[in-house]
Length: 396
Image (cartoon, rainbow, N blue to C red):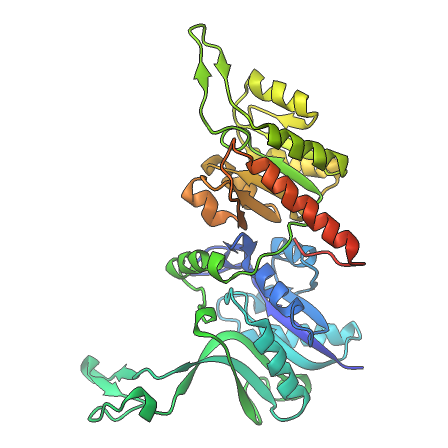
């Protein structure tokens, strides 16, 4: 039987923002967000990422998508989305995948409406429309600049200013998704053909990322728009100062240092260990206090680390735990490298603003005040939920 296949073109290069498709919004890479949006649509049978980039391909596979590697000549600045889609359809045909309906999703739209995507697929499946695209309703007065930069009204009579309720709306493409009959698309080579329909989406979801200010805006919106998800992971890694402690230290007249830690954090780690979830403390500082606390908790510890991300990769490889299945809890800018490579970047509530902006979850508790226990409880709760639902595991 023919399938509904979502294809996400995601090349490695980009003009406006370097490595744009791997930039994170709400702690998740843009290409991964598009994969999840497609997976949440019950009408989609298969999700495919078309890319020329090995790192994007790895991320796509980690999040449960198939991968089509496209040639270099279809991955440059001048290559069209249509060329990538046609190539992907050819490859899928070689793999004996019968694509009946094609859903083209763009990773640069971080808030793709999965429900609207399903409705678009249903419109095409029912043959009421041949192609459907996402759009927002607008009553804006549009103008163009002509010769000498003179303004000319486009969608209205400039001599009349009718009230909103007296005007018919127009619809602006969001670029988030386009759904179409695959066979007809291959014949015409363009996403618009036959009977064209509109899938209305909320204006709040319509942002498209091409420049850095749009990326910053999307990151600010993510905590407001993203639905909470269970922190389903196989390992927990934490910083020490500012996470297990309140980031302060007491120094005696002999130069000896002492810190305050939370007993509830110790219990949280004990519960993680009991559940078979490995824990690592990763610290830039080399301090006997850290060693003593790790020994007390009976967890792995790496100290005096300049490149924390590299050390985390090595530890994950040795433990045979994919980075996508790790939660990392941090509080300051030296944690950013680790937060960028794990599936679940987490921040304490009093973390540096750059850390909270990079986090997928910001905890309610501060460092040294039960933040580690809070994360442990969330991880264990997710594991219990996963165990109660056969074959379910949230992508990370």
